[in-house]
Image 1 (cartoon, each protein chain N blue to C red):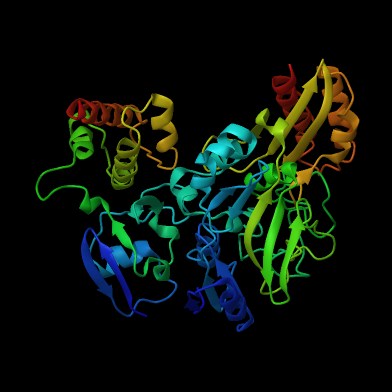
Image 2: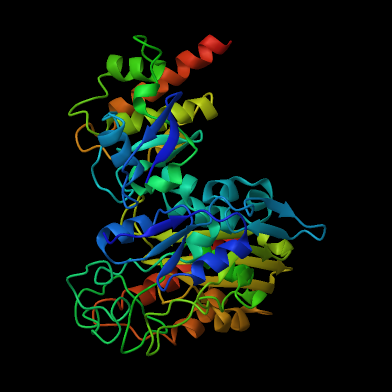
Length: 158
Length: 326
């Protein structure tokens, strides 16, 4: 089947999509956007988190057909050209990346949090990231990065 | 994964007709359980009827203080609704404890009710399972069952229902709206989910083609004092070992009314009717709560490795009621 959808602001058509494919597979293998990672395939690890119509979901649990006519924003769509999004800059500065496999999902989920909640408390950050598993960092530097990005965003808004 | 067709009907009627077109048609909500089950080979629909886009995605407060909740409402939106947070905290807490933000953003209310058990044997197609292949046997009875049922199970199935939201809705006695081949009808909770008996492959009383379009939660003013507590092995991506949804109405130190339902203990969300009956009119004390809990848990028939759930449920019930009632 053919799937027409918008990815990072660009209209895309994917042909010869098998109904059983996930949105994640379509993004990685047909649209050429491998940023979203394929790990647990059951919605546990959050590595495949993308925006679907503005809301973060696990792309591994979205059937390809469900994406028809909808808007997807992946981790590749966070930066403005060469300019990183503040959440990406904060991850770099805080050293919130080790092996990097969980990073794309964490970036999208953290990006959504600080868009919705201007100055998130630690429990709010923990709750927002509860669906993203990282096996390297112990999360401390990830929390630092989210706090930093949120503080800068709040500062810029004042 | 087997090939299947995919359709997006325009309305509920068309959805029901489409679902009757194929022998193994299934409705698709958010996909957070069904897409996973298809990948595992547990679910093998020949047709997916995508109903997530049907116009049942609103939450409406009725004039009398009740709520009408569309079947396609996302779990995140229901948990965040002011009338849920303010007047029905046990429902908001159940939804928030159920899954991560990403899952709640995709999962629908109807799909949440109809999710399948997470029993390890059900999810492993290399193992027998009466729920997956009727008559193939239940290895869980003698095998790995520490997290399975203590109430209402049968010689054919000891699985538990995984939903947290359904436990809170069962405490409320919510009414489920169904559009089916024979027209519309309502099913009260408990009553949607069945106990396994000798047909564990059948989770609910729904017939082929039946579509859940929404729910009514009637007003229950004392549920403003309510709570959902879930005991699990870790705080993310884990299902309840035991959970309790409880609302308590106390006046002058006496329990005037109460609602209690249990999760993680049976094939269906378990309304603790004996407990409620034993508690009404009694002093709001820990002693009363414990006696009432025992009245319910006397029904329990633990398996070899899950008797721990009885004292665990008792403690969770008593502590939750004590926090609500003082």
